[in-house]
Image 1: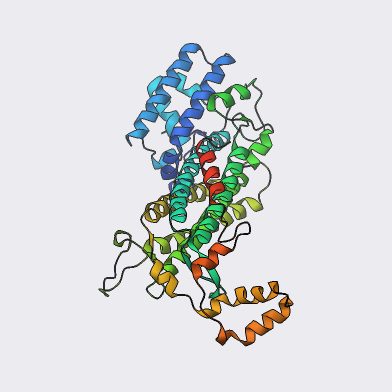
Image 2: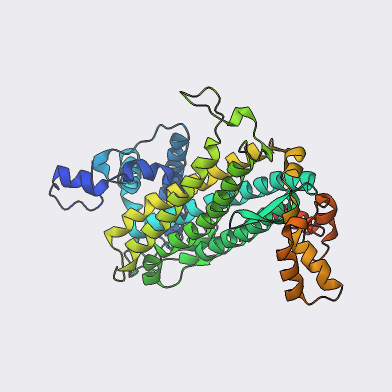
Length: 434
């Protein structure tokens, strides 16, 4: 196998394996996008007469054949090929001879991998966007159905004030809607073509970077060829930051569900099909999926830190360190995608036990409402607070449903604004990223 940097000598085999790392496996995930970028590059080379129309057609046709092989898992990368770029070029040379040797004209593996990862990231962000909409719809249906069922809200995990599943669900919905804004912002930032930046410094050819950018569907060309390479790591960090915010929300959701579904609470009923058992204890039905999501949120956050730390101390231009940012990016996409799908799957079948929710109320939960009632009658609030605090044992149990419905100010339990959230979700369904 010929290496793209072949100088007539053989690199040490053990060192070669070390440097290739996991790229032969990871690169299969971006192989399709490398082919698409190569097709655009070939067409661009033809427009500036560095490829003939016949040569361009031959390369384009063979690159499309590689994409077909990838679909059927029939295209592999050998360890001594190092990466997908070498594997594809060697395949083209084997099939097309000297024509295959022309595909790399005017580019480096640096802008190749940048472009492939950029195209891959755009596609995966779109997948995340669609999965978030699906999860939002499921969660909206849950929230709308159970919005007027009250339960005891907590601060410091102590009984605080009446809450409701409408308030809880609405909070999750609004947070995820903000996360979509982060995903959209990440998409807009990365939607620029780095192809033509070569090894960070451009080339002495009349490359038509705008042409290849449009061929690949980018919004614009990433202008400065040095910044194109400097943005590797930075752009991955921007993406993973957005994904980590989604996972933070799913982690909080998971912890709440684990608590609410515990027998001592019993607010939520988790279907048995989503609750593995214990190998020892016959009585156990465990909320394993939510525990894993909570743990995986830490994994995504750690990958954000990994990418930022790898990039932090590097000088301008390409550095081999960037190879180590590929796995955190790909893994973060996969973890977040799977987590969103699992949450949507389970939440579609979770139900609320209204009886258990009402049973959790005790008189002291209404202490704040009592103090505020005194304040509205003319008692200074600080005096009303002290009087209530000194007479907690004399408070009476109120009707929780009436209580939550009576709180009518914007965003409170009796005025959730779910119709506004519903409209936002519908608007998202009509649009795409960018």
